[in-house]
Length: 354
Image (tube, rainbow, N blue to C red; front, side, top):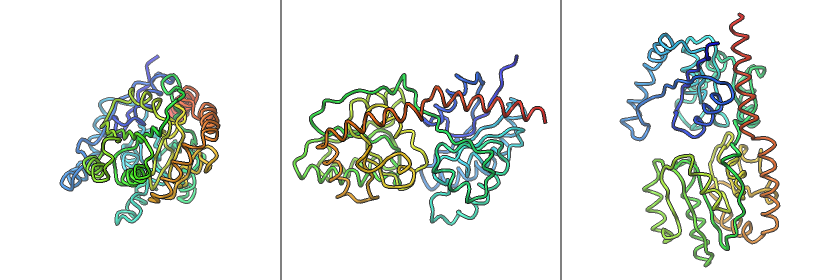
């Protein structure tokens, strides 16, 4: 029997995308080909070029479909690649909402246009992924047919993200989010500056790359904490578990969040989560029970709660055990990706009958 083929539309280098595709190959025996925009979104000029490239993308995608004849098209982000999937003319389409709403930034003049293309993508898709319950709220508001929605995270590979007990005598914190303004790394650095002024020892590892890298390096210098902050730059995803295992506190301060695989990875490696107090995190974290919820940009609160977290060893250790159990039960890559791959085969069988 011929292997079924999937065309993936999205940024194939992203850890999230790699997990999704790897799981489909492993548990669904799919062949996967990819297509993505080639212009990086890192300057004003490139932004215009990227928009032009996006405008011509439907023709490029239809050409690939004619040549490769994939059985289905899958795409990440309902307002970008998801819309391109909807225009592709493919017989079977699955799209994934990546953020809480994907309508971002909230004050954008393009918001009415984004709402329009998202609605079209939702209508054309045969299966819609919500990686967690927080994403379904906006879907219901947008009038999505909820029978098409699969609410399930891709999950964490527990053979890679394994727990380790840190015997560190100081705060060994890690941040694994992209170095973009919405992740508020500047607030994190300022909170650690407060710790430094109080004479509290720490190390802070900032993983990844992004538009704010040089700004954040300069800020660490200005705050006189550069000798305690490690910027790793972009690393292979295979190196991430080791860095998480060496840390005892995971910090993530986004101003908006869908479902964070980074948070699950940290939980799986026994890092204590200190995260922003927003809907995407409230789904998983209860303040001072299994982690900390911090008001956005409240650097004093972040500093205080970091000190509280580190000093309350028993509470922290109970949370770590509770969180590991939670991810094992709800975010197991082997179980969840098998369900997703089976769902694709089921959908293809159904669509091929019609």
